[in-house]
Image 1 (cartoon, helix red, strand yellow):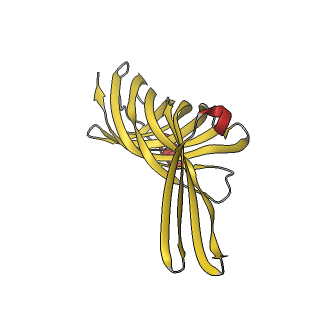
Image 2 (cartoon, rainbow, N blue to C red):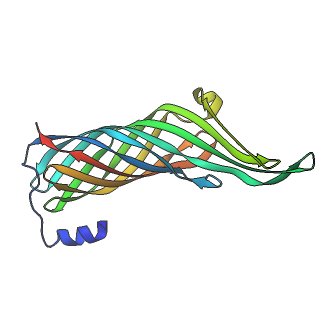
Length: 214
């Protein structure tokens, strides 16, 4: 989609913002996040909410800076199967959810290839503000279903290894109509999630914002 949009740019480009104009865009959306290089990795859905400001540098070019609360992390399948307890068959299924939430500061350049449609890329430092792990276990024993859920707050980098700083490269597309902006972007994690683990954040987000001039 980005390549197609850039091809269109060679044919047509229209002004989106006035040169020198500041705009503000409150935004809310959803993240689909996972951690790379994690065995039996699954995605975690989470909230994305914040605000983004834009400055019109040229007729079809702008610079944005934002502040977003971003729920990230991922899920890990801890196993499923059948065992015998005192000769009685039992089944089990366990999933661990890593809930690492960040304050992200995306700084991006965006080019309006046609009126309303922009391609964008930039840099994004992020700071971890919450880290928890939830273990969900379900199964059956002697024909009776059992379920448990436990949430534990992870305390400090020394105990968990979760790093307090994350850095990513965000790329994406947005489309504006009647001041509403639909935005889709992918955050490519460059830093390790934890000190002793090579996995990185991989986050796709889609959001809706309302843009107004200051």
